[in-house]
Length: 407
Image 1 (cartoon, rainbow, N blue to C red):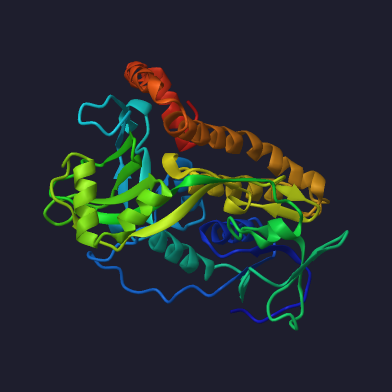
Image 2 (cartoon, rainbow, N blue to C red; image 1 turned 135 degrees about the horizontal axis):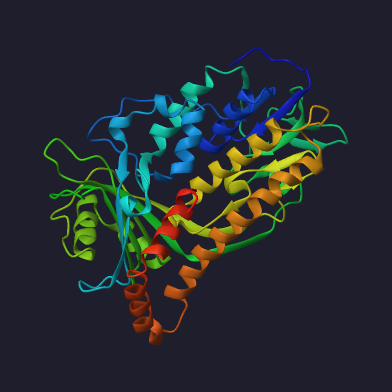
């Protein structure tokens, strides 16, 4: 931790997750003075071929461009990253379900996404942070006092007797339960889905062929994302199974081996027998939209501003989109502009409004179509999947939108 200084900072970022770390690096590169508040990360441990983080992200091409620009991707353990060259989305869990097939080649992309573990990404960001002139305050972000004045914001981190940190702009990157969002009166709409995500990793007998697969079944949304193949070319995969709370409890009650059998049966043995590579975790799902992304001297990024259903795998990409946009707005501001001016911050909010709303409506709409619509329309969904799979231009547009590329 760098020596404390009570000088006025340009930016104070609350939250030390991937989005907060990336934003701190981006704003330091843009020439702003930055402090980052968050608890000290758990000491890294060696990553082994039998130890895989169940939390993974599907990073889009636009996110990869940002991480390359910040010189973070060079610090990632690439042996633990897997490309997604194709994706198959099934209309239901039946063996003869209709599918929509997406291809990076057809869309003119190097890959649809890169699958990376949370731990791998976070460790790379933490290493990159050490090369920057960023003050790091190792403190929790769930407490402390926040005050906003006409010319600056203050955060008195725990313990409350400490001297407050002062900055022209306070940024909440502190997650779905954001202290900054609540303190600034920016809480908006929140909807708890009647689903939980069960996540775990497995080793299959067969290769996944660098293809992500997703099934929309009566038992929820089951996705298998490719992880790096092992030495025998067997496919490691990461499970994200969004199911009802009752079904999630049943799955979590299984042994690791029992869950592996259940997942293999659910996908009709496409990968052969599964062996567990991690313990399972269970995460509640919700949709959240802040009342506004900005206020006087305050901005929100990532899950502090918006949370969506994980079925499209775009939550982290939306957060990194916030980072790229806010860094550009602040870095390109007029010389006389204070970085915390509300008129400047509104440029960021306007730029993010459309992509965030579009992804929120898309994921929420899919959830409602598959799990709240009458059962009688199921045959229509199958017809829609069959028709969409014939529309190459429509599929290319969907892929490039998700990738952050230009169609």
